[in-house]
Every structure is written in structure tokens, then in C-alpha cells.
Image 1 (cartoon, helix red, strand yellow):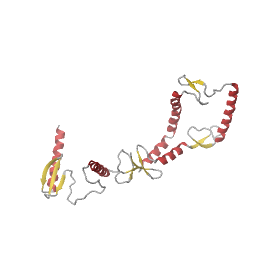
Image 2: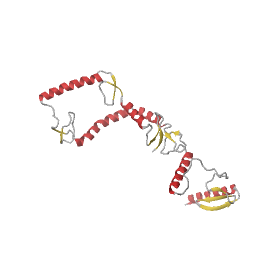
Image 3: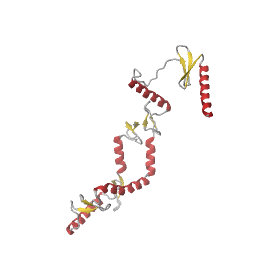
Image 4: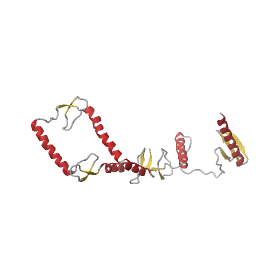
Length: 252
């Protein structure tokens, strides 16, 4: 879970995976993607409907009237299935109690049978709109995540929760500091603002200025090496030790 910025309303929310819309906008987007203008297969008129809608409002009324007349004729001829009667499942061949007029399957087979009917339709729709879905997905990814450290929106292309390596280091420092605070290893919770001592700094990890002796201290692989009068001498020693480690690794 990470902080994301909704691509529709701009509201921040907790999301994971491919989520780019907040819960409210996700519901609206689902309705908008399902309810579209369809073409009636009978009269050719356009109407709003779901993926399986085939008939406009007027044609649906006519079909309902025709179905009612056909049902009345079947009922008069004794060809209907009364509710509560027993019928044969079209999948497993077992008997089931009729609970609705359109029921074809027993309760144990119904879910899988309906899924097998709907699945090809979903795959066909996905194939027809593949380019549209890909473009929409690419558009939603741009500036969709919120950096956990600096709070700026950024394009999420990896599972990281920060926008840059610099923010990743600072966020890791904050997290580790909070862990140490909860364990009682530090007296106060960490802050986003780093403490600046005003002492000279070195770009090499393991080389630091020793306040009490006014010299430069070198630590390598967790082992104390010693104190040096100048920064250049300390950094040269650190680089020499790193070079030795690299050579020993290649000679193994």
C-alpha cells in the first residue's frame, strides 16, 4: 500500500498494484465503462446499455410482450415447468428443484456454467478494445503515486514508495529512526530535517571528522583503522583498502 493521487479528482488515497483512481472515482469509471451507447440488433437505434445489451427500450418491450404471449400459450398447453417441480441439469444431468423460469442448471453447476458463458464475451470485448485499454492504462500511470518522503507526485514504474534515490535514503532513515524510537534506542522520534553539525564532511563512506582530536577517522568494513592529520590522507587510505578488497575478491 502506498499513497497515490487520484487521476480523476486529484484526491490522495491509499492504494496498491495498478490502482490509479480513488474508490469513489473507481465506481464512476466502472459505470461509465460498462454503460455505453449500443446499437439495437432489431431496429438499429442507439441506446445506453451494458456489454450484453442488444435491444433498445421499445424493442425490449415488444420482446417482453411476445414472450408473455408465448408463455401463456405454453401454459395453456401444459408445457411449462411450475415452480417447485423437478428438472434435469443441462451440465451434470442431475435433478434439481425449479426455482425460476429461466433456470437451466442445478445449484452446484450454475456458477461455473454461467462463468463459461460470460468468459468468451469478456475476452472478445478485451480483444476489441485492447489498444484503448492500453492507452488509458498508460495515461493513468503518469504522476499517479505520491512520494512517501517529499510528498511530490511521480510516475510509478516500480514498487518503490519514493520518487528518487535521495528520497529513498531519507525515507529509510526516517523509518529506521522510528523503529529505534519505538524500541527505546533513541529519546525522540526522527525528523525530516537532518541535524547539521557544522563539522567538515567527506563524500567517502567510512571517513569522518573526529571532533575530540581534530583529525580524520577511517572505518572500513566495520573495523576502526585509525586517525589521520588530513582529509586527503584519510580518503587515500580508504580508497586503498577498498581497492585491496576488490583485488582479493577477483583473485578468489
